[in-house]
Amino acid sequence: MLKSGDVVLAQIQFLDSFETKKRPVVVLFKEFTNFVVAGITSNLDMKGIPLAKKEGAIKDSVIKTNYIFTITEKAITKKLFNLSKEKRTVLYNELDKRIARLKE
Figure 1 (spheres, rainbow, N blue to C red):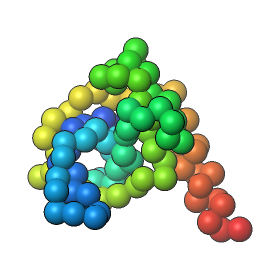
Figure 2: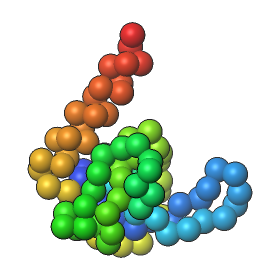
Figure 3: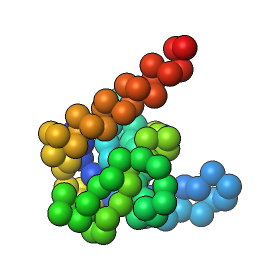
Figure 4: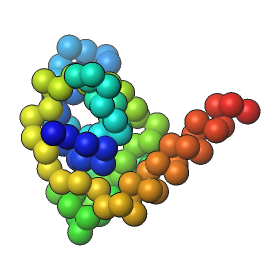
C-alpha cells in the first residue's frame, strides 16, 4: 500500500506525444485508484525542492512542485523509497505556498 511521501517509478506519458517513459515521482495523495504525484528530475537547473542521493534518490535530483499530475495505480511499477518526515514537511509547505498564491 503506497502512501504520501513514497517515491515510486511510474510509466509517464508525455503531453506532446503518445510516448511513455519510466520516471520517478513522489506520491502526494491517493484518490480511489489514482495517485496525485509530483515529478522528479535529475536536471538540477530546474526549480523545486532538492532531493539528494543520501536521502534515497539514485542521483541528486529536484522535486518539481510545478509539475503535479494524476496517474493510475497501474502506471506505478516500483516503490523506490519514502521521503523523510522533514522532507515531506518541506514539500507540503511549498505546495501550501503555491496554493495560497492562487488565492491572491
